[in-house]
Amino acid sequence: MRIEKFSMGTGDRFGRQGRAQLAAVIDIDKNKLPSPDEVDKWSGEQFAKTLRHDLSSPHYNLHFRQLLHVGYKIAAEMGPQYLDALDQHETAIAPHVTENIYKRHIKPVFIG
Image (cartoon, rainbow, N blue to C red; front, side, top):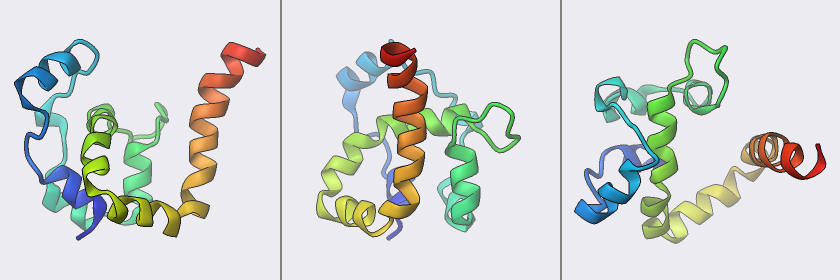
């Protein structure tokens, strides 16, 4: 099973209390999310373009990005399956993590 299909198709995993906590910081419009079947047909490039925080991209989907951010709880439940996928695709993932975390968040705040 592909990681993104698992996270898109598992339903509500956060419970009422978790949803209330997330509602304070997350605003996902379910009507603007692709279906799990649609995501399953995407190439890796399409998935990345939809997820990447690039406001100039016509593929960028804020709601999809927010859903995956809260999906880390599901990733944690997947344990080795998720961690093994990260290890397997580290060379493709690492530069984007550096771009997002370091250049967009850490550098402006701490380095200037």
